[in-house]
Image (tube, rainbow, N blue to C red; front, side):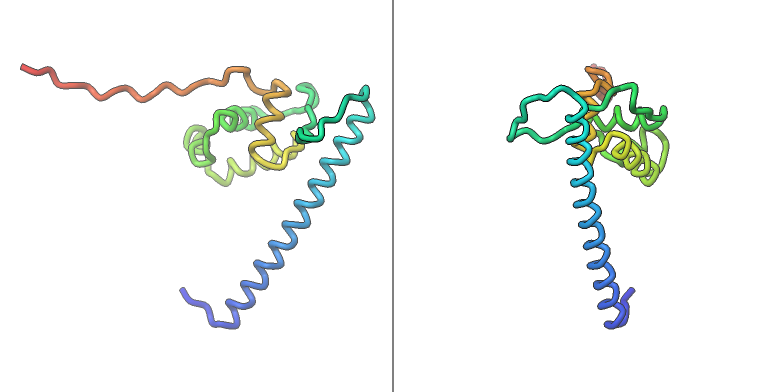
Length: 145
């Protein structure tokens, strides 16, 4: 379906504005994570700062309260499962998976999937050896006569 030229320009401008807003939110999130990390380190014994390592704040297991479903999503996420496969495995929509991921990121203070996985593993929020899915059974061979 084609839009008149003046609408396409308006849509493009609206999308550009949204992109700018999202970029600002990302920048604010990065600043907030940095501030949180500084506060957390000020509350603990001083530790040497490694310039090359990313600042990942470890989350104490008892301070993070995930719902049962969020825990299931996190465990699948650690296994590298896509949103689509998570949704099929848990019999929920992809939008619901995204909503759970959003809340998981928020509770862990993570910016993305990778950071959430690293925090979850370092904080022992997921089993040390995640469940490995069994491979599909091999097709049966017909006996030869």
